[in-house]
Length: 294
Ligand SMILES: Nc1ncnc2c1ncn2[C@@H]1O[C@H](COP(=O)(O)OP(=O)(O)OP(=O)(O)O)[C@@H](O)[C@H]1O
Ligand SMILES: [Mg+2]
Image 1 (tube, helix red, strand yellow):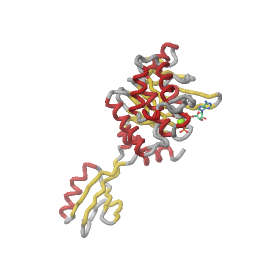
Image 2: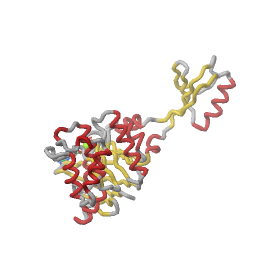
Image 3: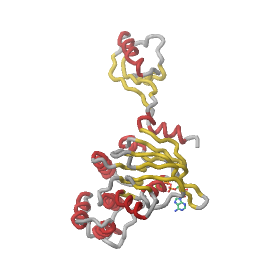
Image 4: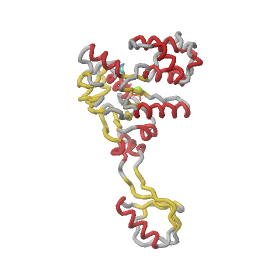
């Protein structure tokens, strides 16, 4: 396990930001961290990265106990890459000098070469000597991701990495996440994009101060709600569990194991079937079902 937390809790004065958070994450897995504004997602990422202390509870991150000692926190920071909600660069320094500074904090060998390679990789090479204050939002975000990966972390904590990015830039962040995952890097992806989680995450953690759901993505969305059949048919046989019909699209209430029999009956009744799909609950629907009533 790359992350294992037990009852992690953080208060700010009287306010509880995160209460009793218990979850784990394996090597090479992507955890989608979801929850409404103010749910405690950023606070969770900052605790995991060793940037703020937990009020109570414990966590092991990359094999070290969080907050146990300065040495443990330093080891965690050396293995974690952070893409914070707000990038936080030295605006009056160039992108290159910013990355050189952060490479210096990690005492990276070969820092200059790494920094230039990172700038090229994130298509900032041409603008590397420009002050960060002259960068667009998307450019700052790419620089933030470049910084997070400079020291080749085992765990990458991404706080809304695609917020405000154009579709192409978003797609390139998504392929980067897949690439890191394929290398065995673990990622916590905090986002408000349910599509992003559906496309990239192995596990989901839904937070609303406390954990509302934690488990595999498939487990969260697995409720099957019947079958959708596109077909032409003159008359439907009697006794079919038709839930809904919209022109040539029919939705039946049948369990997956009943579908072959259903199709045989339809074909026997002269149906020209063009497609059959299972209707699964979308992540969006499950999310709204879970948090809608709060
Ligand atoms: N430094 C702080 N001082 C006081 N309260 C804080 C601090 N940081 C966070 N909080 C509080 O903790 C709670 C959780 O905030 P957090 O930023 O973790 O939420 P979030 O899930 O990231 O929200 P969003 O989706 O809006 O980014 C909020 O009530 C917030 O006001
Ligand atoms: Mg946040």
